[in-house]
Amino acid sequence: MHAPPPAQDTTPTTRDPARRARVPRPQVVLAIAIAVALLTIGAAPAVARVAESAVSLRGGRNAGSRPVNGLPTPDGHRRLLLVGDSLTYGGAAQFDAEMTSHGVTTRYVGGPGTGLLSNQDRWILQTAQQIEAFHPDVVVIEACCNYALFDPRYVTASGVAVAPDSPLMYAEWAKAARSILTVARSGGATVHWVTTPDAGPLLAPKIEPRIRRFNAISAALPVSQIDWRAVVEPHGAFTSTVDGVRVRQADDLHLTAAGSERVAMATWNAISHDPWR
Image 1 (cartoon, rainbow, N blue to C red):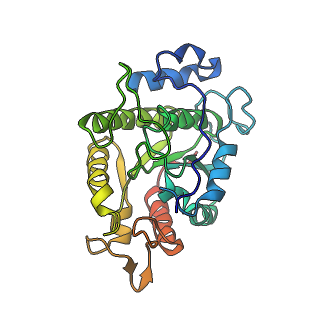
Image 2: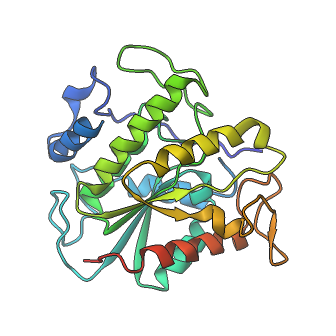
């Protein structure tokens, strides 16, 4: 049922003390920011795009006319970085269509089946790379419920492998959330965090407690929320249809094209008044 996991990123992360010395020199500013703060259906096209989007800072080939220092300069182009898992990637076509209609270029970080702790903070490093190379004006972060789905368990700085749904997992997830928020803001972008919709009866026993806990952690962060849950659950409880249109796939978690259209529009409505440089 699940798409194959995305290729693992072997680039060292700055939260791994044993590898910190090998961070490329052009990443020093973003590495400091990291140190200070320190689901998988229908998403294949977006997986391909993120591999292209995760540009090495040493090349800087996608930086355009902006300086390769992580700080955007006004150039009249609107850039949106979407960080997320299969809820985001599964709606890539709908996000691209919605944002293109408003003159916004989109890129993606993360991947289906991954999460904030995947591959020892891969999301954080990928976000740092895109802040440096893409210079987004706005960053939207969505982190539903994945942990150690396709990748090994997260290992703490003290060498402890983190068990799923343990107090330590939630504590490390909260640390990673604060870290990625700091990194996302390090280039001057406006940042938003997504409130994840509930899971339906099929998957709720397994992942609904995690969804609610992650939502609670993100709600406590100093960042504005984009409430996808309200968009596909307008009456405050799980539903697979809205106004007679199915918005959830058969697993009652992932979004249909119609569901993704709704959250893409809601996302634009939330970010449309942000400062675009």
